[in-house]
Image (cartoon, rainbow, N blue to C red; front, side, top):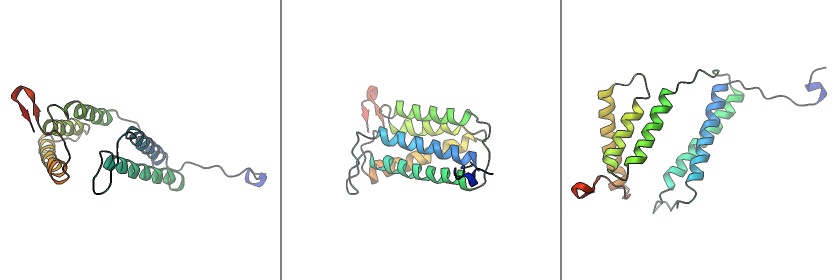
Length: 165
């Protein structure tokens, strides 16, 4: 007699381990971000607080993670592949460099530095294209956050030269 004939219930089978693990990692990262933002004000749509965009981005990432978890049980997919540390190591280094340089010397240095370092996480990196991308994205983000959204981001802080933009 099979298990189902005994009434013990069906066992959930993982059909896509890569989707399942990816989804769980995304959910974990989203929960961590929401937890870290716990003391920051979300604000309103008229007056955005410092936690609004990161909190809602984390919620969306967590939702997509939940979709991946469901897909891990419902759709055939890829098995787990061998993990490579190059990508995560360079992205983490970029994040740490951004955090270390955003206050001083400021966004104009921190943003391209972080993007360039993180870009080397790919084996197919093209340095010239990466630098152009980093500079264009830095300009676009500076215009968006500092001027369009009026966020108080330190753009360039060089105390030795009495520069504080």
